Length: 92
Image 1 (cartoon, one colour):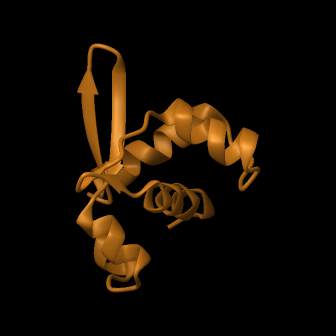
Image 2 (cartoon, rainbow, N blue to C red):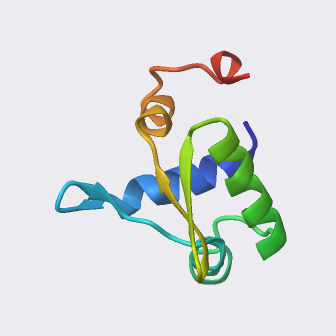
């Protein structure tokens, strides 16, 4: 798990939920906040998008698509990973 992956998961965790549903966000929004606003990491939007796809491939994020593009949200597995209930080795 890379520094970028952890930053993305922590960002989604902080977004929380609304009426019991996890907040969704596109890669552009995540990049704007982590890189441009909060300056947590220095990665390109392409890298953020690629890492979000990888996190979804590992079921830590859920990917949803519509006519406007791809959106992601945290999964229970992602929450469990951040809480320390799951080790990174268990994900591969």
